[in-house]
Length: 167
Image (cartoon, rainbow, N blue to C red; front, side, top):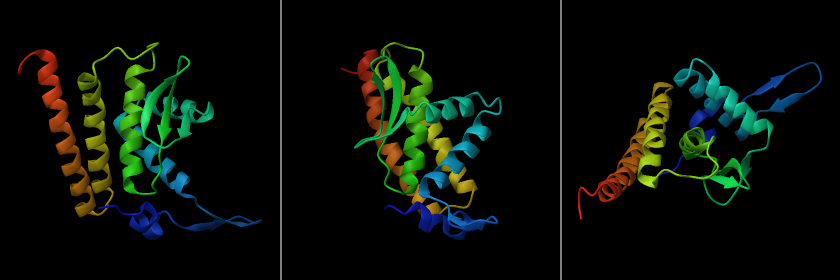
């Protein structure tokens, strides 16, 4: 179940505003940016994460790609994005941004994937609850939470394997 972000937001964010010279339509990227900024301010009032996000944008470390991931390119961590223009873009960005926060000071990834996923999953879940609080379609959010729960079960299984709790 996918809902286009612009369809979901309706008139809230797809709007025109005018100054004395022109009328400009707000782009999808601007809408997504607004949600990201608002969420980062909510979860980190110190604004450290907001500054990290702005730095990523300013240094072109948020790249368009064919997949979502946080990757080390020649010693520099970047977030690769695969925009679908759905609410999944917000969820996926927050997930990858938390990966970035987790690994940004490392030269290479050193955490096992099962351990690396938990902070991202936690904040991804908070991001979905944030969307619900903002009035987004509860059915869509419930679907995305259900999807996350399925993926998380796999991560928990892998963590148990890693810790030797199951053979």
